[in-house]
Amino acid sequence: MPRPRLDGTPAKPANRRKLSDAFLRSVKPDPQRVMMVWDTKQPGLVFALQPSGSRAWKVVYSRHGRPRWYHISNAASIGLANARKLAGRIMFQVAEGKDPHADRIAGRGKGTFEQLALRYRNEYAKKHNKSWKQPADLIDKHILPSWGKLPAGDIKRADVERLLAHHTPSMANQVLAAASAVFSWAIKKEIVESNPCRLVDRNETNSRERVLSDSEIAKFWAAFDSAGVAGVALKTNLLVGQRPGEVAHMWREHIADGWWNLPGLPIPEIAWPGTKNDQNHRVWLAEPVQTLLSVMDGVGFAFPYARSLDDKMRTTMRGICKKLGVERATPHDLRRTHGTMITRLGFGRDAMNRIQNHLEGGIADVYDQHEYAAENKKIMETVARHIMALAEGGAAANVVEMRQVER
Image 1 (spheres, rainbow, N blue to C red):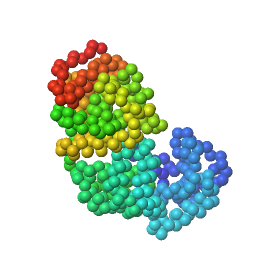
Image 2: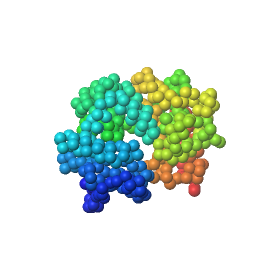
Image 3: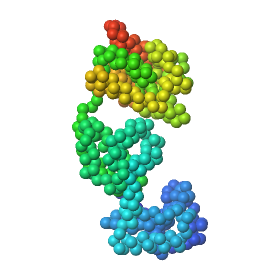
Image 4: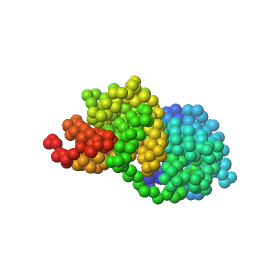
């Protein structure tokens, strides 16, 4: 029963032979593909040899007209004779109408959802998702209190719908996405068979386009004055327009001659998250920003408590919005306000994309940050002056549309 090809072309005839210890000792791996050898003595038993040299025993049987692949063991741990015995037991269960592969998955899924979520976080999310902490917080706060002790494989769509019924439409969507990511990973790892979130409808919500108004900039700036380190970080966020997680983890050694040089890739030893697009990036720190940073006494990090500052910035913004009685705003909305200010002052969308390290339309791939250094510096200084004028309650500086700097 050879595996069908993905492109629909006929599969090659199975490689069948009576396996022997001599053959297993002498066979060499194919560097281009996985070698599968079907044993003619024990039906269903397959010897699998990876290009790396790794060897394994498999049992293949049919269920509802589709092949099932059951992993027995690493061939280095079990010899041919024992592999045939184990394969015989599996095929006997199949003859009784059982599905050993499905039973194995169901058994794995009997662990609690809390255990599954922790595995997903440690084995996958932290390694592959730079924004892993936010969905992790959603799981800890909104999902584990209800599902933490439930067997992961027993959670059904009705459980998902009951959980989401207690949240606002926007929060329900976020919780649903966080839970679905855990189950999708668990399916790939053959821990559970299905994702109970899959057919649950998401709520329609308006996309967030929150930008602070001129009057709000003054109000928020004044509120930041009494918010300690988080307040200084939020002011910096508004003035540099970069992602809040990048600002929170700003590293002093990455600042040289007024330029903040953001490494594209993560640096775990200093908790640097890397940029979202993995591209190195340069940001000019305008005079007001350099003044803000000069009063910070962080060692290594520009801001003290950097490892928890990202969360503190979010909670500070929530508190300020409640105190001011205004629509919810986030640290990311400060970045959006900065980007909007760039285009509002006539510098154009390309300049905004370049400065904020976007990849829209391939812009960040094309521009040479050093080639545009003079223009970027001028833009950052102009935007900072304009924001400071608004923050201090005075009339914003008159700014005329800048002609593109000759290349």
